[in-house]
Image (cartoon, rainbow, N blue to C red; front, side):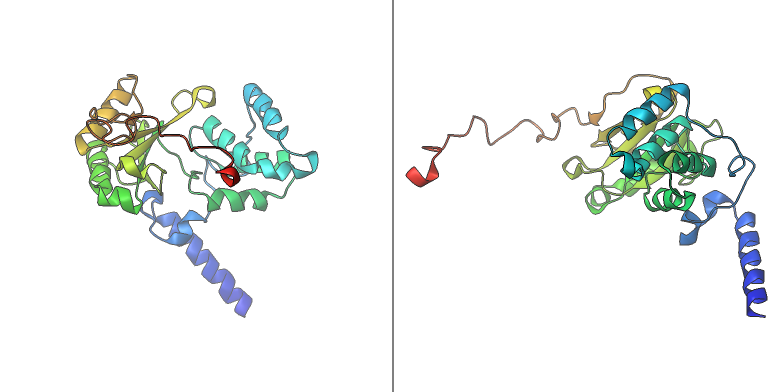
Length: 254
């Protein structure tokens, strides 16, 4: 009786998820829930390209032969680059076969790390840093400007397939907040790039989108012309010369 009720409830949950558009799912379980679709199911053939098979071999060479599973993250990253920015379950299965583990071991990694996308993204996947320093400096305004300009919601893909917008936690450049990352999958895995754009404004992120659309070359790093890298506006006011060396290197003899 209990088993029948559990099976019925599971069926109801699966049907409910099928009826809710992927982009509008707000349940935390949606991040870890897989439902077979025509373009994402284990029956689809997936394998690395000839070029990437050589990269797979090179990646595996960094690990002892009895620890192939340690290569799961770089191999998933390579698979995601090849597949246009996201990981179908068939790609995860291919990685599991290469490192000789059960598929669930790969699924555990792909569902844990937020940098792995399990739904399609745009050729240019824009990630807005949402950690506290960036939020204080206006990251929500930056995200709103991108979503409004592109006419999408978070994690939706534009109709032309070019852009999608997501959130990422701490990109490690808080001194240049707010910032975004552009993951460029437009040229395949062989010319994949992942660049930071710092000190952005709502106006500047829209300009970046349009430059990407036109195929123009962008200069990553700070977008504030008054700063050099992470230095202050107007240049340094301290540490203007080399520091004085200690009187001697042998501290016990000083």
